[in-house]
Length: 265
Image (tube, rainbow, N blue to C red; front, side, top):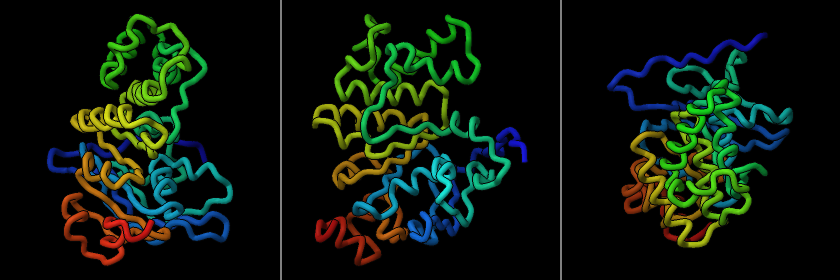
């Protein structure tokens, strides 16, 4: 069946839910990796996904832009609605979805191109050809990623010459260049030093004014510092979710209390 253009429903002023995940199950072959996950992710908030290694955090994150659908061994069941549109429909246009949902990975992965070309890559793919427009997009994206002042005089230098923290902010700028609504961040500071981590956290807090952000993190203090909502996963199940302050201070589930207090994980 030929893919059709992705046309999410128009959000009303009252609508705050961007993703509505209902009874999501995912199998890697015979391994049941996500089990009956039901979760709503809200607009212009930071949602932290926490839990021990192997609990399904990154797998869940990758279902939100359908990266998992590209694996032939993976089977999905349930519903994922993005702005009211069913993502698991065979009619979903992946190209448009990837434009609307940006993703940044654990390790910085700039292209072996210039700083400018890294950021301009996405807009070029989506049809932007005019140099003046590309230049404006690159500057805006680098400013939004708190990187412009550090690189404005060397835009045509190799991106791989940047420090690790700068490379990660460049990857965020690259994601922002397509004007997404959502940013998916998979442990974006785990490979960075404390100073670079702080800059990324400050950036995330600024970006939530414009974007919906879902971040996978192993760092409990980071989740408390930057997130509005937190979801705790354990062995493929969503154990508990809710406002971050409440989940960390008065969790409803004993497993959540044990995890956030450092008794396991």
